[in-house]
Length: 259
Length: 254
Image (cartoon, rainbow over all chains, first blue to last red; front, side, top):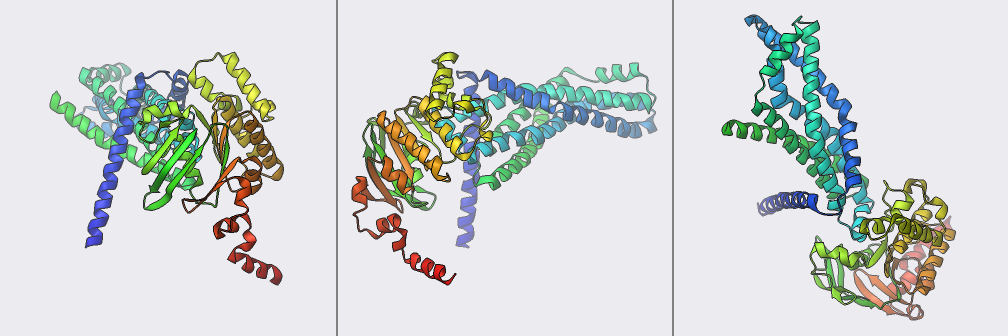
């Protein structure tokens, strides 16, 4: 019994320490955004890696999501003779929920794990210690540039995902369901409200923050050599995905309550 | 001048250092000897402020650093440079950018001035031809020499070395030893952590020996070989260790 209580106490303290370290890293990374010297070269490099590098997967994600939504939506709307409104279903569901969440999950898999494994390798090969020994701050030099790049590029990638989801839906609507292009695009855009667009852009920014910070935290806290690199990379993917899904629910609920 | 005064450090449940005190006057080369896991590298990390002692103090040029907040430590760290055991070169940067990293970050010098210092430092370690290479293209010995060039280019008056000859062939180990001797004549303060006795006796002004986190010897290299302490004798002459008899018997059997 005493051992169980002791173990529980240590587990709880362990989790609290993780939360404390994560919060501290978040705070220091954000605070460094405004600290000179600005890492312009590194930010551009990261924007290229995160933005241009992820373009292909978000295009495919968006397009196939739109195509599947069109097919499934048509099945549901057909009994009511409302197949023609399938673009309304696609645009609202993609812009509000599916675009931001699916793009973020794909980017977490590609970019978040990339950040975690790169920083983890630097940690186990003492490169992070070498940066500190050089009198520089690894958070300023490595984490802040990745955060800025994620904050700028993930909303852009989400817009591209949304656009290609609409395009994929149009392909199915036009060539399989024989819906007129004019009606598809007009009703698709008409269904969207300003708050949908706001929510659709706010969510990717929050997800970008989570992907960058979780990746950096997993990388910086790596222990145990090459095995540790693998553990950190997996940890980053799992934590980012769960946080993205949980935050999506909270943001949606919050937005509904406000509006 | 580096001063450690009665330093204790534990990591988790494990005691790493106990009551460690010594100083390194400016211009001196001090070698820290000891077996694997004896706490040698931890001492370098304490000097750099990468670890904080549980008790005791660490001072650089008279300034106590143990209690300084993290944001003030870069100023102290810029007085020093460290050559890591695996060199710890930045994989994504070329040899040129690695060596000039600190100067580039400081932003005080023009690109041409940095290039000149980088070339001079690489020339000193005999690697000017590798200036455009990436760290992945270099051998272990070359990486360590680039690490030394990086330390030199920083202009630091204190250089810390973690096992500078570990894993190197005798020729590369001699090259590193020769570089340390040259830096000694330039008046650089050096702290060398090693278990390479050849290197230690060649470069040391004074030697410290650590065993299980405690200082068991401090003095001139000549004094070390006269000590009768079993831990010292065992380290200097492994043939005196109890396991040596077993090794001899095994050798005779084969």
